[in-house]
Image 1: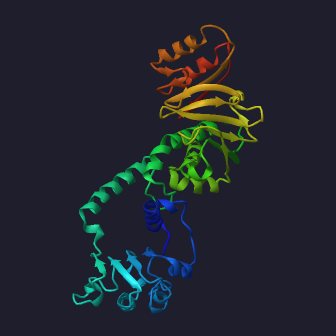
Image 2: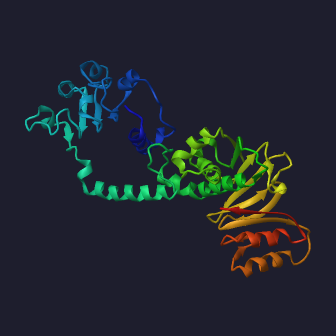
Length: 369
């Protein structure tokens, strides 16, 4: 009863205890739930609508031998009615750490009942909770740095193992979004962005909600406010930005959650004409290789560039010495080129102008990651 953050986590754990039925959680109405459940675990707030929601009438509708767990609020159960249900054998056992009156009276008939397990409502005062307080502080610091906040209440809740698996793809999505929006030129505003996820996994086995970090990558370069996963969607809506998603199911072994992520921006001009695909959109595509995000396509051109540092994209006449010429200009300013066109530091405007003026270079753009 109650399917928020805590209730859904309990359901996830309960699924693991019943492998024969681990095909999903069925959401049913209140009356059906109390009439069919073997275990009832309460996780709702105490409101006028939930006050004494379990009472003589509702206990009478339950299966004989039902077990009750209440870790929500004491007032959601009529405690006198619970004692009567225990004595009548309707409720086989009850486990409680919340009570209508806290602490409960020492001679409380409910607390003293032989089929009731009780613990005091003091979770915040335990050793484990103090460790959690440190984890919360670390999570806040991480969120302020723009990192993933797995336990935030207003972002998608994702199990730790899924978060670990998706983390490099989240970074990939954010950086692709950042690259794509920097390629827009000519004063044209970005209104529609299409994101394509390609995977060999079935849709039910692939949680891509966290990949909406791509919104953060899109908004940050064009916004004067601090952007994180929490406010990125709100800021996008304020700007009239529409993001659509498409999933492409591929054949093959589902070892990796995603084969590639593609970002397309339609109806805009580009600062780098070669970034326009054959279908007319600015297109960037990337994959994760050995845990590192890579840019693998720009427009219709296949590339393979690690998404670290910053990127210089050049399209030049195919002739010897071009990489050496560009590298020499960057080297004069002590800007290191660590892989193809990935640079560790930001070159000066003068240096970038020198590269752009090289006769054989037909187009050129500098992109910050």
